[in-house]
Length: 201
Ligand code: URA
Image 1: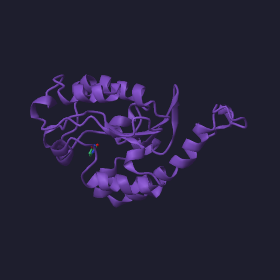
Image 2 (image 1 turned 90 degrees about the horizontal axis):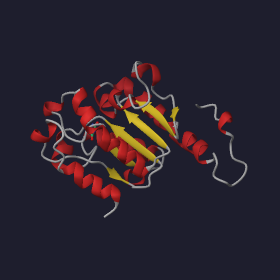
Image 3 (image 1 turned 90 degrees about the vertical axis):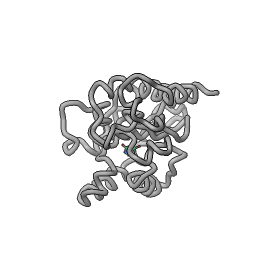
């Protein structure tokens, strides 16, 4: 069993916060264990809690369309959430629940080692941006250590309010260019783009 699979087994039986009492299935995350892109949502909802997989409801279908729009499928990326168990009635995750779960996400990031983390919604946005609103920073890549974070509205927001739909689509369309800029830095092939010329960041 890989270290990532072992971590996911640990998450499935996690007792660290109150959400473990009401969950049906914890939702560690899934996708490619070597993905260059990781997508981090908020928390499992009804369908995710039933199936133990992230983004399998209506928001997930929209996310799959967004991925397809840049020629990606969900098994080419890694998808997870800030908290791994469903908050009752889909309420917002609480600060102590986010903190209890944070070590799991940190370890997933170490093990998958993505180049780009797309944060979906205001909770995961805080991995890179604090003290700002998502309306101000969505679509703006930010490098933190070796990883570039790209904040976006949550796909569920687009299902409820159509004005978010085109914003998410526009932000998603930036991914290929950001990724190709990152992959050309220091890949040893010569002719790389020096980091200082990556004006995106
Ligand atoms: N919304 C999320 O943030 N995560 C899921 O897994 C499903 C819906």
